[in-house]
Image (cartoon, rainbow over all chains, first blue to last red; front, side, top):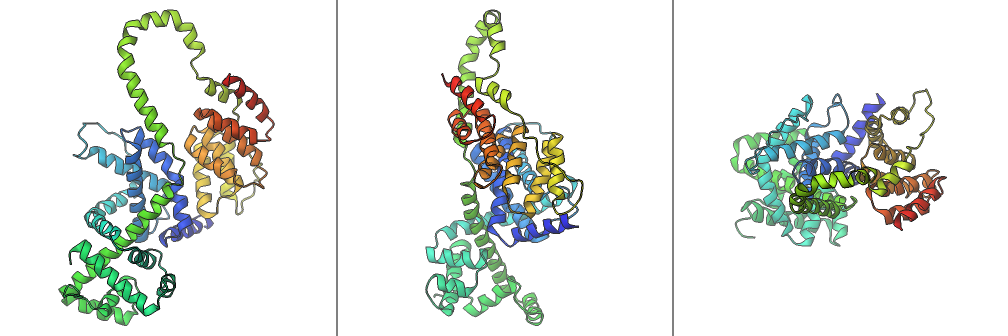
Length: 188
Length: 254
């Protein structure tokens, strides 16, 4: 059906990191999440952090599993529910001292797998944050080369042109930047 | 490089090719076979996988912060309002308890007639959702849009919004969609999303909905209590009722 194949096209764009599609998804869904969190003992800062966390999880989930066509609703609703449930998890956690009796059940049955997926991410999460911190300490040129190659999926040829060197030098630069990152982040 | 450089560039690039799915089946099979017996290689692979994931995370985080700056920022206002409310509660309540009976008796009638803030009364007086578009009975490419329009006209705003969000997954935003999304959100009391969509709508300056978009944007600001912004927007609008709203708002200011 046209409906599903167009939904699939949008999902594909999200997975491939198309900036416009990601921006659309991001900007359109923050408001309900923010309102929910503000009405449930949260602050605006917390709303932003939880939302970005949920956005990241949703994106990684899409990359790994695609989006189940038989799932009701859209990716938009999906993202919002992931965010709300992350907030509920936080409220239930030991770091949140108050005893609040929470009766909300937001997730629909097909989305338990997302929660499980999200839990599985937690092990990586701590290390990812360390890598992210290390990454921020790299030089601008390294950051640019690595992001362009691994995130924006640009070709080595393009990347070489951007920093005015030949392709072989650019490849070597990428290798040395990765080594540097490995040392800083993983203590290798 | 010191001996921390365990992995020659070629070894690294081989792992990278594996991770990014660039090996042909034969090379891949060889690599996986070597992997099963070689713990150093397994570690190197795992580390590289994590680093790549970390870089993607860094890239995404940068993008998200950039997207976030595109969201209309009402955060200061909301926190200020919350803090103010808390302050009022803690200081005023003891006095209210003492004077409450007197207040109710003496000011009861005055309170009832002024229950609504002036700007909300003004909003309520003028707000009527736009009548919407004619919905053809046929199916076709725009089925989802018109199906949402039927919901909109039946005042099922949440359903309309849900359907139109799905349209937005397939098509880029246009003036019609951003206008009706904005009005639907406003009718559904979601001021933030109304603002976002109507602010998009007014950027289509050749649109037949331009006057209407400015008009409803003005009403949204009015509902929110942002009178200056409301007045500015309303003055941009050639909508039939815009002048009347401007008049009422200017009286309000005095």
